[in-house]
Length: 550
Image 1 (cartoon, one colour):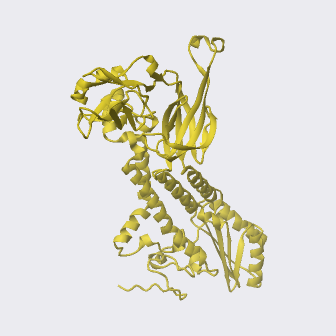
Image 2 (spheres, one colour; image 1 turned 180 degrees about the vertical axis):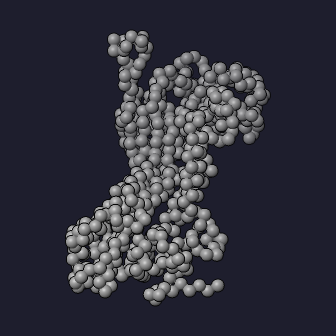
């Protein structure tokens, strides 16, 4: 049905407008009431109040609801608490044991891990909640800021009598003399109190601190930037929080990067007994541990097999709270280990059928060569396991990135072997050879061939190991920018308030109405002070027309 929304002043208002956008006269049901006006957005209709909404409008209405936004925030807070019941996987150094939660926390830990709560903050549903909060912030802001902008940008100076009479702060009286001269003097009194005054003959609009109305929306912009920055951490290369262990003299590739880090030397100083309290005497307590580190960029041959071509980028002596830093990457000193580990072995290949020995050849645990020639036999390295295990299906797998149980899978070619070659698993450590059945893994080759180290001279051990925390967080500057913008919005909204005073004089009849978004006590005080400058004594409380009387 057609609805006539044209005001008596001649302005055509959109359907749903509560107050005329031009003169402010109450429209529709609002015209039947005598209660103080609801001045939010000056009565301008919002999109979420649209009659007969379509499918897109319903989606818009859903996300523009403040109640929905509050529920989304509550659900996200509850989800966040789930992630704090047990430690997250990312808080462990080289976490790789799926049974950890069950072993440590029992059945609740098993359920916690099975539900994926050990990676709560990386889960699709948690990220989905953040996306919905961001969507709600954007739509809530647009649904309100556009009507507010239109209302404040189209303010008319001469307002309807009903508009003035139904403000929460009002004053009416009869005055003598020239109305325009009286209005000019009243404008001067308001200007001295910091108001910007606009006049139209004997009508006046005085306004100050309009900028404070944008505080909540500036806050929303900051929160949106903050949320986008948090979500940006899922972009490859934007966020990294990993741990690497590198022995003195060795280098290691940093996870998810094209960088290598070399531990040139590692030193640790311990407290002397006389420096320790009695309870700790006799214990080894580190005073200072330092990694002399060099950072390289891989230029070619960056795979796990073979010697990569590296270019040195920077060097730094890493100690606690003094990380190596390069273009957003930081390497923090985290821990150390003085127990040596296997670095390389120099085994012989023994052909059991004739007792012939071939070699030795140097086999590095972390940087093995891609192939070896041993007499008539050739070895091609197919893959390497740093911490060998058999999974639930009996297939070889890595238990972790640390060289706890190194294993090498070779393709052997030579006399007495198939033309395409045959595979052979080699375990450098005796305990691993005993733990994993060679007959099961290598089949008939275990009866013919054996790798054996002649003496301890063929075994190389690592020096002291340094554990470093490698971090990249390219989103952090945007997190701080969002937080700063949000704080600016909060300050604007909390410490200033938008105050407006309308005045008109008709044939000696003075009508004044005033409005503020908060602090009605100050609003009444401003108006009373300006009236006193006009020799009109008035009690500020008597100006109240149903507003906040505190």
